Image (cartoon, rainbow, N blue to C red; front, side, top):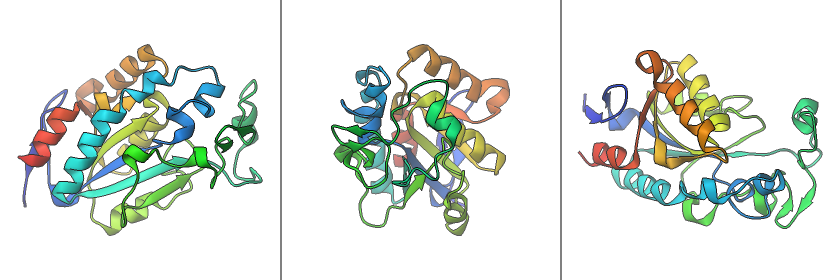
Length: 222
């Protein structure tokens, strides 16, 4: 077995590049660009855009190494039939399905639903369209990972405390080892990101490991 090491907290993570995948969570225009879902909710999208540059570096290193790359997009059918009422209301207005500068917000096929150009998938990279927060819920992600023999996931994207860590928790329950480079994830609420990442690595990596882009790249190149 070819084994490499990611330097991380709470301790280093051994991995085999042949059984490792990069999962890029929801780097969509609706979340990280002005005029999308994130801004419609009153958030400052500049807080999540800080993750773009390190994500591009990790993505380039992953492609260079030849490890599997998977992208996810959160969104819904045009009739919103796959969007639970609780998600539509959530105690107030959420704007899902309403017209915006980039089309109907969080609706599949609209411009805002698509992945940003800086991180756009290349031919052969699966794109998982998910209706929920976790990337395993009502998708074929687990099947795809199993079919490729994947055991370790590098998880990047937005937002840290919602879709990123929900996916990591789902993955942990399915037997995957997950590592999050902290500069490759973003939140509209920095304090939420801080505590979300602390929870992931707590109690001896109860859900996974936390690292940074430089350590991920060094591990991939090592």
